[in-house]
Amino acid sequence: MKPADIVSLLGRLAVGGVLLYAGFSKALAPAAEFAAALDTYHLFPAAALTPIALVVPWFEIWTGLFLIAGLYTCWAAGCAAGLFTTFLAVLASAKMRHIDLASCGCFGAETLSPAVTVKLDAGLWVIALLLLFFHRRTRSLTLDSKCD
Image (tube, rainbow, N blue to C red; front, side):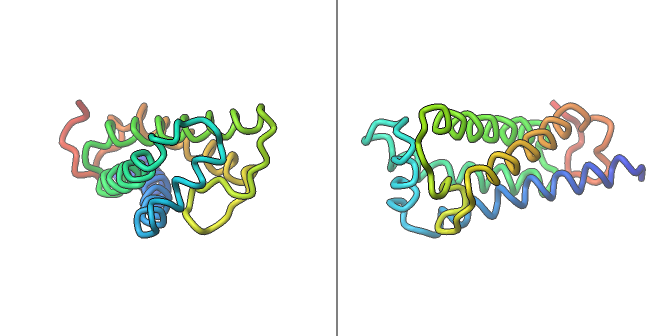
């Protein structure tokens, strides 16, 4: 086992753990809570808020589980990077449009300031990209047999 394997495992646990926590915190709460948080961004039509609020938490949960397990790691890391790209774009959009957010809605009822959320998302985005691009060299602590 190489040090890179351990670093990769820690990265998977960090990204996967945050996604798992964020997903469960929203999935266990009424979908209307997350839908209301999404509505504050003024990006989505009203008819799309509830479907988005129902799907996103479960996508986060499954992505987190696959990363933690090291199963389909390339796909899971790509999905995680895509999620964080989306989260950062939504937060940047709100900032550019001068929308004052009390909370980003990322962790359900728990509130994190958008500034903290941007830093967290950016760091996790970088880790997800590193996992995606370097996974082929560090798979001894995964369930993956190959990265296709």
